[in-house]
Length: 104
Image 1: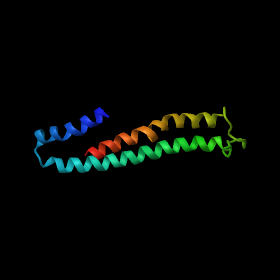
Image 2 (image 1 turned 60 degrees about the vertical axis):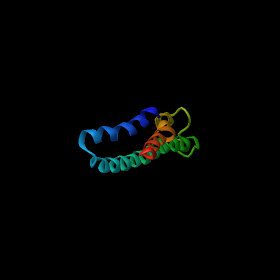
Image 3 (image 1 turned 30 degrees about the horizontal axis):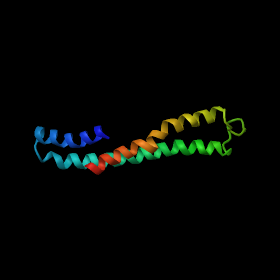
Image 4 (image 1 turned 120 degrees about the vertical axis):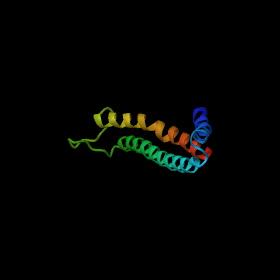
């Protein structure tokens, strides 16, 4: 959180001294819109990985051979990888971007 806070504080200052005060309006609009877009995308990506694993654990998923995808199958292993990759997005990353936007 220190790095994102420093980025929020230092970026406008550097831009003002480099390009003048009129650059700030466009910079803030772009930063806020892109931050919201990234936060929504990260939350959806992480949630999809998490819910895919839960769907596989429920026993409803059927593989290409017509068998249920149980623990230990290739589909379940892929879902675990998706959950492992998606967890930081779903629970950590988008909150950091929201802090960034709140500070803006």
